[in-house]
Image (cartoon, rainbow, N blue to C red; front, side, top):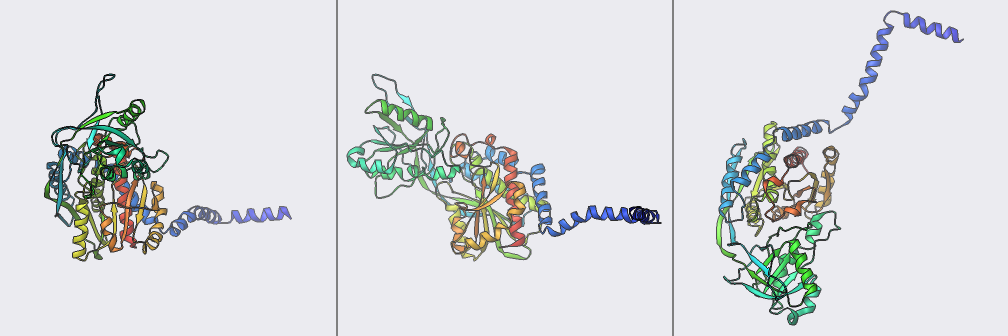
Amino acid sequence: MKNKTTSYLASLLRAKGIWRFWIGFLIVSLTLPAELLAQKDPWAADKAFIRKIFDRSLSDGQSHPWLRDLCYGAGHRLSGSAGAEKAVRWAKAVLDTCGLDSVWLQPVMVPRWERGAPEVVEVTGTPKRKAMRLPALALGGSVGTGGKAVVGEVVEICSWEALDSLGRQGVTGKIVFYNRPMECRHINTFEAYGGAVDQRVSGPSRAAKYGAVAVLVRSMGLALDDYPHTGTLRYDSAYALIPAAAISTNAAERLSALLREEKNVRVSMTLNCRTLPDVLSYNVIGEIRGSLMPDKVLLVGGHLDSWDVGQGAHDDGAGCVQSMEVLYLLRKLGYRPRHTLRCVLFMNEENGLRGGLTYAAAAEEKEEIHLFALESDAGGFTPRGFSFDADPEMIDYYFDQVSQFEEVLRPFGLMLWRGGSGADISPLRGQKGLLAGLRPDSQRYFDFHHTAADVFEAVHPRELQLGAASMAALIYLIDKYGL
């Protein structure tokens, strides 16, 4: 039986044309699975286009040279300053070269606070030791010391309960030193920042409530270094306005050690800052009009102002140039958006949020619909994904819609999760659209945040470009599929 079967198969193979059949069958069997796989992947075209976005950003992106021009052309850009005015002119000029449908300036009245001459904060000398200078920066919005030093005994406070327990008897006439560090065990350093920054924001007024004459705050950073971190405070008008400054983390460690060793440690503080009348500034806006739904806006943005130390490279020059690049990349790739894509560079995020509030109020007045808003304000580091926020009635629905995009974005190292967006776009929350924030790796951000170290050289070009491409990819997906 076996010999008959073998002989029969051999005769078939010798038949004319049989070999062609088998070769054709082999080719089809090898290629068919790939073709079927492509047909079964509904995201194939989107993955291909997003690949083009990343290729273009990494090979020909403009975000890094733009950031260099912003940092060295305008420098630090606190609202109301000459640097902020230069930044507005620069941003409009660059957007005018990007082939957008329209570019304009939106007037914003902003606060004007000036630091003045450098601060002098030092532990006064004693017969046993010399005076010790503490690297310090006045907190944004702080009152000055009136041209002379404020001197007082220092009391260290590590919790609000400790402050309240001392009360007026333990605080009146003294300088309160808040020394609660950022919690190093948080993987997300923004959680650590959120758990400590209340000392800076409300600490001066809470100390003034008990009669303190001034406040020192440990800088909001995880690293031990000699860079003091500035940042805004909020005075409560019910209490006296007292001068307040941040000292570096190394200085905080030295001062704390000295307080453990000696009694009646005194500090002298001279701050030359002042608040001037509000001045006119601008949000800078550019857009590509939508082809199908021009009345619905997808916004991408960052804040153009920065603190008055360093160059504001990570905070938030990086977010501005990334937002500009989103529209630049999509235009260069010939993409025709369905919705209107709008880049907004907000003014005065750092010490007032006037730009965001003004923009939202104008949008409401014009009855503009913001379907989606994406902000980059967490530094120009390697992008890890996006976090999403919305009205509580809408967040479940929206997050279900965007969750499907994770399959497309995961190959580029991006994940999606709930939780937060950005300060400047937060006033748009009332429109009940979806808000999002670019979330880069956060481990190094607070080494630079609000310090003189936040300069152009601290931003890696590849990380910056990856962030811009990531933002463009998400804008593309939401524009194409909607919410």
